Image (cartoon, rainbow, N blue to C red):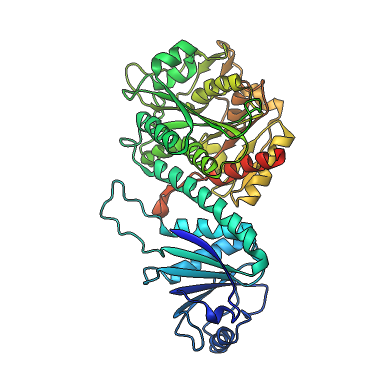
Length: 487
């Protein structure tokens, strides 16, 4: 799909040449576009009770007298923000679903900037996505081959930048979503390693994929303990993007890559266990972010680390009460084998020290407790570093990919004490998302660190079951903001 920016024709929207036009009207404005033929049609529809300027309302108009575009869809946004524009675009696209539209023009009544342009690409990408890898019978959604954002001339430069960034983010989101949606017998640790290599070849990334022997040599006893029950070989993936000088400390993203989580010996209930294929959502977001950043080529150094394996029960599986030695040298008493994500992440966080990073952010579908706390809208953000937390919160707002900062008080560490090791891998149920973050914090003393618990946002259940591609937008905006700061 091609995205373009068009200057508003001298004769206004009525003079546009396209197969369809979506006009987004803010609910807090006037029901007018500034073009007499369109405004006359809107006035007639409003008078007839067919249209109201209320958020979420849409109206399809065909063959408006005096307008060259045959198909016109009106969509009302809550306000003039990029977030509201994206929601209105989704509704507007739905009114044109499966119509013969090769060229779609889009106009926001009001000021459109780079954020609106990015929101447009994300709305179109989401509307056109259909999973087909293991469902060839799925019917594709007919989408326009060309989408043009119509803006005033003074907004064209910003809109072009927004479309460029938006297309890269959308491609990263699509990659993360597709990886997460593939079943666990397709998306294996080996396959994730091959995907990383393919991405490396396409975008010039440096990629290294370590096997079990290499991890044993590094002393990753915690990571290795999780994979013991599975016949699928583990992989430890390291991806590097070099966009700045070698001396510039990189940002490191660490993604949890459990391609299927049974809970191990601490077996999960059967209900909804199929959704444990989504337990590699953190890994998927790292792959998607690496792709987006590599396409945009900012002047920053970025490292993506993905420890990936399955968590399965067998005669070789790690047992509750076992004690393992992490790469850091700290010993861990494994009280619950279903708290495995932190066990693979802690060794990856120790490995990250070798890059002498400016900051490390780990991303994981880590705890059900975070879903209980924040639901399915905000990811949980944990960090002892106010500056890093502030940057991530700002990125979440600009990307419309929200997170919420959670506490990390030292008192929460008390629940992780063990009589038989330096630390236990779980505490009590109360504050479970926080104690999980406190566990990870023990392995991050060498650098500024933040943890994103995306258990509630990386995928959806029910009729809309599937990966969301979050938080690729948040992470990409965070990396780009760090690059802009140095420019």
